[in-house]
Length: 309
Image 1 (tube, rainbow, N blue to C red):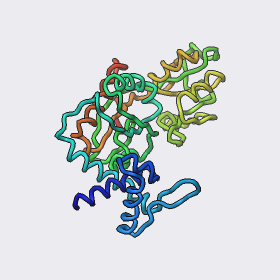
Image 2 (image 1 turned 90 degrees about the vertical axis):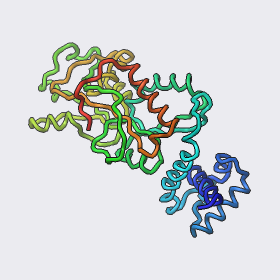
Image 3 (image 1 turned 90 degrees about the horizontal axis):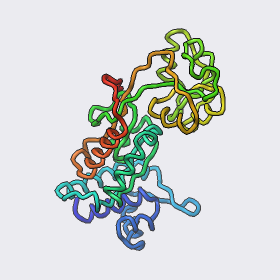
Image 4 (image 1 turned 60 degrees about the vertical axis):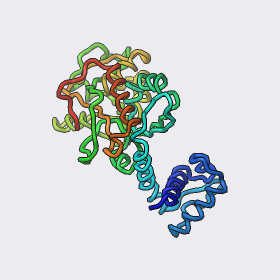
């Protein structure tokens, strides 16, 4: 690959990320005619139109969609090759990080992290996207930079660090007939439940434990966020099982009562994960350390032996 090929690869990455000749040109500092010329060359080299007209805008072709994460990953690796020796300064860094997170992360650590970023790196841009079952693959392909959540088995090359641990509790509205009483198993399964299902899947560890006892809870509402679920509970006789740290935050504003669940639910770990490709990147390492600092600021009671799966 020569210098011309590398420049073309950078232009291709911009086009695939932006799906717009004008925005891609602005992203890499080229004129719009120059980017249009680069697009024409890439179309000729790859034998594919890459971008096609769709109404008022442009959309990627099927091949362009396949190339998008691979090209982005290659460009990121090339950039690291030339920047690893640079002195990193958070005050002047002008960069965007894409981070897969759950609702939990925003609630518990989001404000602390945001304050630290504002203080140390005012020009840094953070783009948060929902965590999914494909977070590890997104890190591998380079379409995201970091991911934070509770993960099952991860690919062996993915690097991890525990940020925080938590455990489940139940919440009821303040005027609920069972508020302040012990939540027995009989009472628990007799109630109507709200479930937080951020990835759209019903069930969970609580349901597995109930099924092992030949029991089943009645989930009448399944919603993607803690706040939406807690708002429903505050205005009804539903019960909600959720993370204790989130429950404490929401209980104060929505007048909820926290009660212990009737089954022993193990504490669990929330992990920061990343691909080894970016492990030595100074800016990436700094951001990881900032997440650790934010987690340490808001916690003081991490659970020894918390489930990490």
